[in-house]
Length: 601
Figure: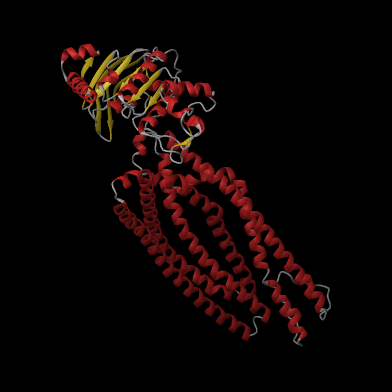
C-alpha cells in the first residue's frame, strides 16, 4: 500500500498552508546559513586589522557590500553594521520559526481530526463481521494514535527533512564559494550515511511493527480487564491477571528496548562518522589556510558550516527512521479505511413507502465460512407477531439481525414490500426497526440520554412514557437524580434486569414500525416480563413484533412461533398447533412450566 499517497488525500486540502510552512522553514534556514558570514567579516575586516594585520577582502562573503564606502579603519561603524545585520537575521529567523511552528500545528491538528473522524465514521458504518477481525486494542490504536503519527510526519518529519536537506545545500554552496575542496569530506559522509540508512530503515520498520503489535496487545488486555473487572474479582483471579499483564507489559518494554538498542548503535556509528569527517575537514582547512588559500575569517566560517552539515546529515537519517513508524501505522489505518463495507447502499436506491411487509425466501447466512441460518422462509406482514425459539447457538440472534441488514443474507432473498432489501438504502431499512439486543450496552451518560439515543431532542414526556411501557419508570424514580442519574461505565451500577428495561425503553422511544426483541427479558422475572409484554400489546399492538427467547412464555402469545435448530426451522405454528404436535416446542414449554410451578410451591 502506498501510505504517502493515501495520507496525501487528507493533506491535500492544507497544501497551501504546508507550502507556506516549508517556505518559512527555508527562510529560517537561509538566515541560519547567512549568520556564519558575519564572524568572517568581523575577523578579517575588524579584529585582525585592529591588531595590525592587513585587511582581507573575500569575494565569497555576501555581506561585503555593508562595508563599501567605509574607511579601512572605521572599525566601530563596520562592527555596528555587521551586528545590526546579525540581529535582523536572528529576529527574522525567530519570527519565521514562530509563525511556521504555530501554523503547521494548527493545520496538522485539523488534518489529524479529519483522519480520526473518518476512522470513527468507518468504525460505526463497518459491518460487525469485519470489526470482529480486530481487537479492541487494535481499533483504539487505529482511531487514536495512528492519525497522530501520520499528522506528525507532515507537520514535523517531512518538513524537517526538507529543512535539513536545504541546510546542507546552502552550507555546501557557501563552502564551495570559499574552496570546492572543503565539501569533499561532508559529501563522503553523505554517501556513507545513505548506504547505512537503507539497512537502518529496514530494521526500524520491523522494530516499529513489533512495537505497535505489543502496544495493541497491551491496550487490548487493559480494555478487557476494565470491562471484566467484576468477573475477575468474583473469581479471585487478580493474581492470574496481574501475571498475564506483567508478561504483556514486559513484551512491550522489550520491544522498545530492542528499538532503543538499534537506534543507539546506529547513532553511535553516525556520530563517529561525523566526528571523523570533522577531523578530516579541519585537516583540509588547515592545509588550505597554511598555504594562504583561506583567511582566518574564512576558516572560522568553514568550521561553522562543517558543524552544521554533519548534524543535519544525522538528523536526516534519524527522521527517515522515524518515518518508518508512520509507514507501519499508516498501512494499518488505511487498510482499515479501505476495507469495503460488507453491507453497502446500491446505486439508485428507492425510498420505502408504507408499512413494511417482510418476506424471507430460502435465506441463508454464513459468517466466517460457518452457515448460521439455512434456507429460512418467513412471511411477516405488517402487524404480525412472530416468536423465535431454539437452544443457544441455534441462530435466533443471527436471524433477528438479518432483518435490518446488520448481517447480510448470503443466500436467498429478503424483501420489503415486494422489493429486494438491497434496493433500499441501509439507513432507511434500519429506521424501520427498533431493536433490543441480547447484550445490553449503556453509554456513560444520563438515564434520559440513554433512552433518547435515537432522538436527543425528544421531549421528556416521550422518554417517561417509553420508560413506563418498558417497566423502567418505577426504579428510575428511585435513582438519586432520577432521569438525570449518570449510568453506564462512569455511573452507578444497575442490575441486569434494569439495564434490559432501559434498553427496551430506548428501542420503544424510536417508535419504529417493527420491534425486534432478542432475548432481552432473560434477566427479568416472569411477572415483570408478562407486564412488559402486556404493555407492548396495548401500546404497540399494531406493530410488527419479533421476539427471540429461550422462554416459551415469552412467545406463546405470538401469531406464529418458529423453532430453530442448527439454523433450520424444524417446527412452526401457533402455540396451540405446536402443543398438539408434541415436538421440541412442546417439550420445552412443559419443562419450563413444570419448573415455574415448582418454584411457586
